[in-house]
Length: 143
Image 1 (cartoon, rainbow, N blue to C red):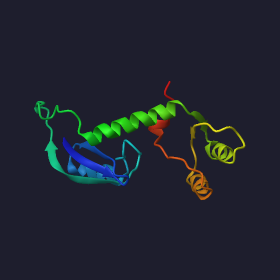
Image 2: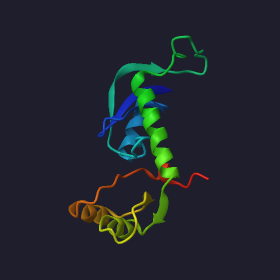
Image 3: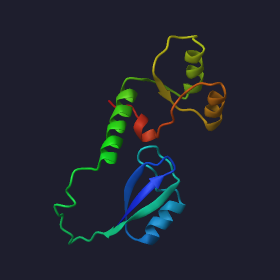
């Protein structure tokens, strides 16, 4: 196994484990490698120690250190996002329509989540309606 440090276009850093350098290249070209934070498929390798892990590699005290502050901060951000998602209404494919109703004060303000096409998202931005795109993995119902 080869461990690579990776980064998406939104500067989220994470690591990926691959069977070989060719395996990483194949998965990247097929957009199978995605950011676990924002689901971005544009991923780059960052300089790293290029760790190779074999089945006989034993964990050491160095590898068992606590996460670096950036990883902790991203974990806290992910926790906060999941909290927001848990306290929002899932409006599904009607997201754009419901976001407009809230923005134009046709209905009471509340937190919503759902799906919008790229065209709908562009229209919402053009209308000055603020929203945040999240990967589907984060927006599933959390019951």
